[in-house]
Length: 240
Image (cartoon, rainbow, N blue to C red; front, side, top):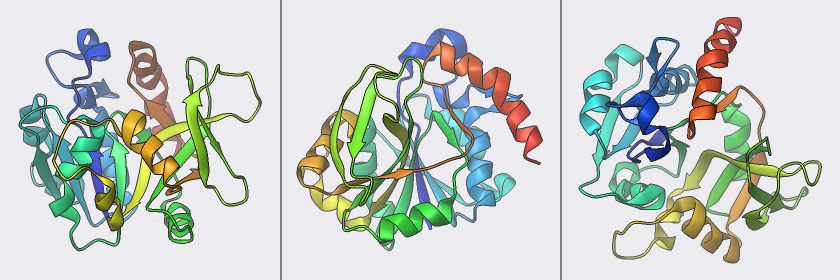
């Protein structure tokens, strides 16, 4: 199984903390944040990784190279201009021509989940996309509502954290069937997968939610990045 990592974002909210490197290369425990995820994917048996790069791509490509040092083959999909998370997936279409399903990660996310369970869940659904969901935490506002029986998502909307027990959020980790590319516009353009593409899939009844468990960190804001710096190295040491 292959994995696509979306690492081409501008990362403006974290730029002061991590300049000159891109957000995904922010240091956590003496290593780039993205390295922790790449090594984890290697341990989980991912056959190869494609990293979608755009902004400051040289920092990513120089560090990871062909992936030999990290135990998994790595290739790159380049953006000539910002494409958003959805456009980045669309742009990588040719990298997954022979894949029935593939894994997609936001580059600012570390999530140690049960891959086998997630894949089995997705293959048991009749949709083209499955999203790992997690409980809403302080500062989160995007809620995911779905059937507890089937996992089919009925809405993605803003929720105040803590208003309802059990509210869930998008975990930034997905499994897509190759048929996902039939739902993209014919012309490659800048699309947000979270704000534009997923709501479209909900209307088409093609998006499902899988409740995962495991170590999870996301570094999209300075507060979350600082939390990862303090906690993730300890969690990784405990899991050895």
